[in-house]
Image (cartoon, rainbow, N blue to C red):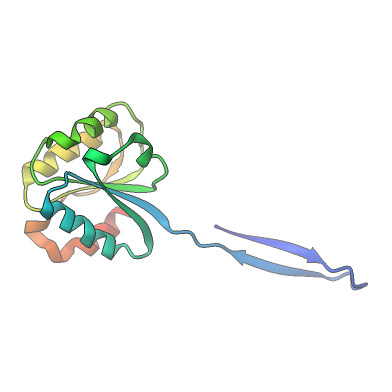
Length: 149
């Protein structure tokens, strides 16, 4: 966000002085995981890669619907498909419109898990990027994140 404004000093000089104010805000990003150790480790690595963003890592069991509203992008990760902790999130994503919001799904190593998560985000019409499976290319995490954001 940025803006310009003009200011007239009452010193008898009718000249205007122009100032430019630039305000930079961090992008808010939410990462929701199933709470498995390997998924949490990957989520923390993601937060480290996104230093220019405000990242909130939340376990699905602690997730509330209001967590997703103020974020510009979100990521979902789980170790195995259909973890019990994702029940509320899965239900919510069937009834909320997140059309166009950047989203990524990831798993430490399960193709089935990312297919499950891709199905969840399809329902809410989020702008889902390519899924990320860490076992395939953990070193490519930073590049994958940049393609989503």
